Amino acid sequence: MAMMEEFKKFAMRGNVVDLAVGVIIGGAFARITDSLVKDVVMPPIGAVLGGLDFANYYIPLNNQGYNLPLAEAQKAGAVLAYGNFLTILLNFILLAFIIFQMVRVINRLRGPAEEAKPAAAPVTPEDIVLLREIRDSLKK
Image (cartoon, rainbow, N blue to C red):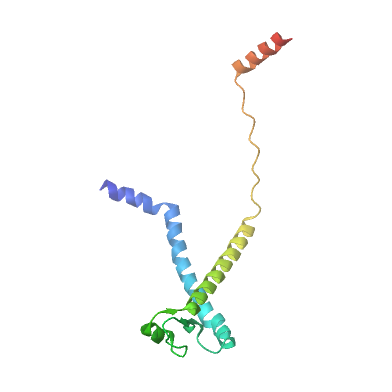
């Protein structure tokens, strides 16, 4: 029973709950940016580059030919599927940029960071002060 109590304390700490909320919202946000890339950004790029679905761009490595859809070409042998990689890379770049912008806005809303106050000089113990005075008087 002690382990369950310890787990309950761990799970209910603020950091763990905040992390869980962040992961859930991040997952949903990733789906939104994935849709943005696949449904809004990549179709015009695909149209400019030949009208095909950009995810179906590949280089055949087994003499499959370029006219097959990606799934068929993969069944026929090895392919270098660069189109899907570029789509995912663009998705990551957009997601990172949006998160960067969100962090900038949050930091601005928080206001300027409080400047660190200089630490007060440590108080020298009285016996050390007396020893220094004795030393200085002996030097004279």
